Image (cartoon, rainbow, N blue to C red):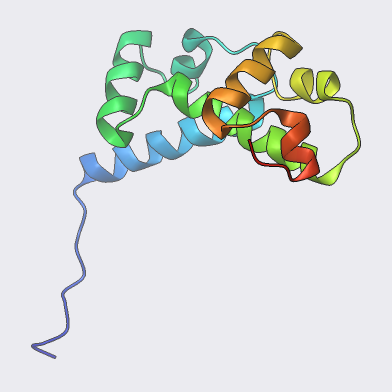
Length: 123
């Protein structure tokens, strides 16, 4: 028993922070296809916009909008792999404001275009 690690007890503040972070993740995953604002995301956990940014960055090491972008890209990759939907339809379904912006962001972060990704081609 001495060699077994003791369970780490989280303080109420840590527990509240984890719940708040989970709520932000959940809110973004539920609403990623919408035109989300920082005010909406922050409001979902009763924080000001600036406090939400600070809290999220401190907890995750990334910004709220980089997380949102990654959720949208992941969903786009899934739709490209599993459907024959046009790239423009996928872009809008994932919350991107235009097809060209989706392609630009996809190329920047994935190193290939959506169509090449769908075909399994590397750049």
